[in-house]
Image 1 (cartoon, helix red, strand yellow):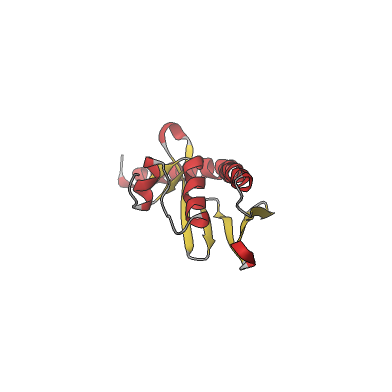
Image 2: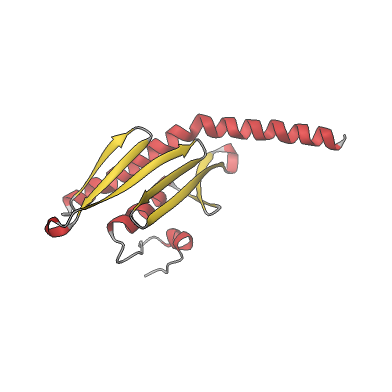
Length: 149
């Protein structure tokens, strides 16, 4: 087998990987949004003035500041079939879609696999509670550089 054969195999493997990601990207984005909406619903029941809006590939989370001091908006976007971003104010997070163990497509943040639930917590924690900036979930701390309580 020559190096050309190796490169042809690598090209084929890459095409298969990309196809798998493309086929699963929408489902992962939807699963992430579903987790976010669940946390938003809980936040509303606890008195936070937060809502969601937007289109399928570009979703918004709006937080009303207390005492009518305006609002902050966070945008969750599938930039491509390979990247989901959360941006608004000082928050700018990117999550890559990749093939993980057992050929399952997953989210990664800074090269580490992260569940949709952890991703939602990471995004919302920094958006809803920027003054606290810690989530009581040990696995999230390694991605944020925080510490466990």
